Amino acid sequence: MSAATSVGPVVPAVSGVRRRGRGRWNAPLVAGLILFGLIVLCALCAPLLTSYDPIKQDLTNAFLEPGSKGHLLGTDSLGRDVLSRLLYGARVDLQVGVFAVVSPFVIGSLIGLVAGWFGGWLDAVVGRVVDMVIAFPFLVLVIALVFAMGPGTTSIYTAITLVGWVAYCRIVRGQVLVAKEQEYAMAARASGLPTWRILIRHLLPNVLLQAIVFSMSDIVLTLLAIVTLGFLGLGVPPPTPDWGTMIQEGQQFILDKWYMSTIPGLAVVLTGLALALIADGIVEKANR
Image 1: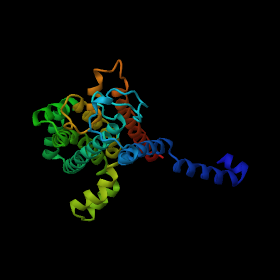
Image 2: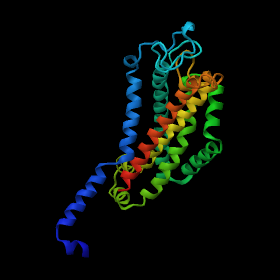
Image 3: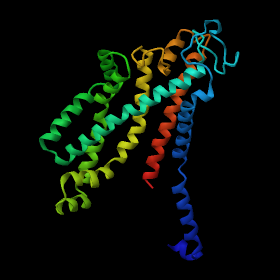
Image 4: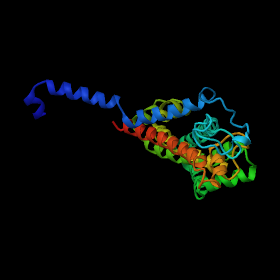
């Protein structure tokens, strides 16, 4: 206050502009959205960026180095264009990675919302189930379930849903335990509103932020699970391109044909970096 008084009314106006500017520009969020947007755009525009069929074999042009004969990123052991397989593989992995998080997010958030609000025996049962699932490493449990159900996208969706919902349940339940003691929740309850309306209209919008932030890192974890499953031969069935399968196919040639495994590996790293920046940006913006 003393500094503001000494320099007059100009300083508060300038500081207000700066605060609004910082609130508008969030570097991690913008960088993450741009990077992830470019990755998604490349996947969507795959037919425009390459003319090669990602599954068509051409043994006469196998193991071409990047830039050879019109193949920007070279060809693999079967003569398939690496760039084409990378772009079409991004379509598959990003689609599975994003949509595989939706079901756990919805199911876990709703269960955590109900368990945290009602408490009692319901909360105790949910808590025991969550503890049992969390006792096993996420990736190991997903691999075991997919192995039992067989490879394919349906098995991946099912396995990730059965394992992934517990994290969202814990996050939302913890938020609800705090939020239901707040004045707005107590006022809504005292006014006689139906329970479903209190949960959906009043509590849920106020407890989802942490779950949304976690979903960004969860997509990364899910993407790593998909790549791992593809590497182990339990992912998307061939000949459909997949980053994990590309890494697995190139590992035996890694010393001479480094690009076959390195390029899809870098794609996984860049996608994870983009999602991590988005998550950090959301947290930074929420804390302002």
